[in-house]
Length: 398
Image (cartoon, rainbow, N blue to C red; front, side, top):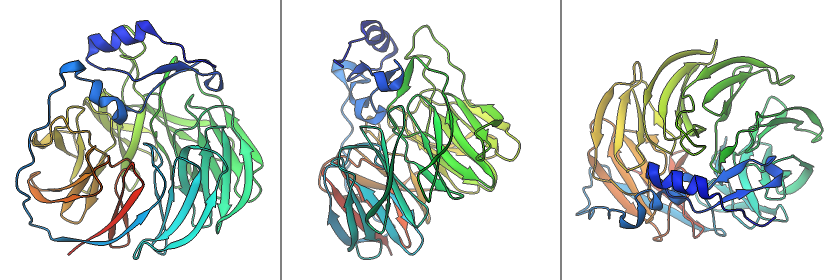
């Protein structure tokens, strides 16, 4: 189907200060439209006169970090999230459908496989299966580099599958959820979404908390019975507001911060908040205009606003603990809490280490100059970042 330009949405974006690369009507999304990945479009959020980021200045090194290894895979688009398995194994995927297992300590390739076509989401894993989703809506499961099974879903997928409890859960862009048997690929149940008029092409929220499947459905964190797909509870993080579909878009975005049964998450361009996943009680929410996920520790949550201002919030009530604007107008990944630091990447291939205490600089690393496309992950004692050009970098704080 040829892309259909939605002129009403474009004008609404201009009024709200957000620009869009493309809006398409896609049959496989049940006539929903797709807003391109927020990080890839944020360059247009400020119009043709987008402010330039400030010069970075000299690197301040308070936490020494050494580069332990590098590896090369194919081009990696936004949304192809790496998975970390027990035993320091790292699972990665590239746009062309290649799936890789690397040793997180050395970067050495353990196995490589192909899904046979370009990917839209991945990788999910339980330590045995590695699961990705193609742009043809095929859910493909691999075991030790060999294809185990392949099944279809009815809509495009942008969130990595969740493999847990002997099942594979797949959340599509229309917020339908399908459960497959991990052993055979047999479909167990499917829960249809509510047919939102506009969906965000960005990894959403899908995780297991004890015996509950927790998913981000529009602006709600939702607890689901993994056995049959029935809703156990719903906790709104943000409610749709505004006069057009773009302004009303409040999808929850990954990553999330989990501490016990408490899950803290972000609603796109609207709010952050925390929920008790045991009973679905919303603990607090507060306005926050960001597009990337958050991470946290026992005391604070960390994230960035759409304009690149980095913030820390008290975990108990969401009050601002500190805020820094040195990275303003940079396109930042979600943070990773790592030791005494938080780590974020930008669209120029920089990797920033900021103090958890006050947001001050503690180190800065360079990669290949292309955007850091996936949220940084920790594999054992190694920090791993992935660039759009397919560079995979393993760094070890000392």
